[in-house]
Image 1 (cartoon, helix red, strand yellow):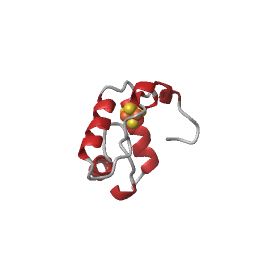
Image 2 (image 1 turned 30 degrees about the horizontal axis):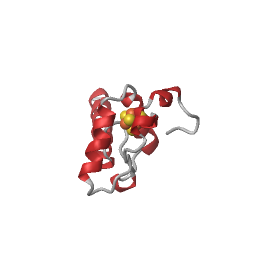
Image 3 (image 1 turned 90 degrees about the horizontal axis):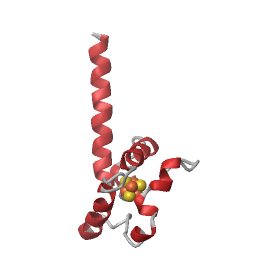
Image 4 (image 1 turned 135 degrees about the horizontal axis):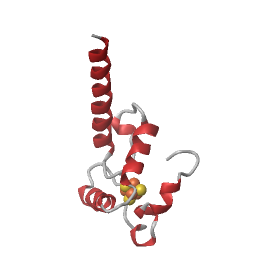
Length: 98
Ligand code: SF4
């Protein structure tokens, strides 16, 4: 998350009392905890803001340095999303330069 707390974080489901017991930083092989966290994110009204913030702050970090479930995605899934976006931007720039 950004250094200044963004307004959307007040609406984050993971910060609400009923969900405080959910583990948003499961071990990579803990599929059960991962699925529980992803299910909470699926109902979260600010998942888009959360995912955008994660992709922005993590930048080009390798997947093993992307911790926890954010915006409904694991670190490996966010890495794949980041790669897709950067490749699409590169292709668009190359196409525009032709
Ligand atoms: S999308 Fe998930 S991790 Fe992000 S704020 Fe919502 S509940 Fe929390």
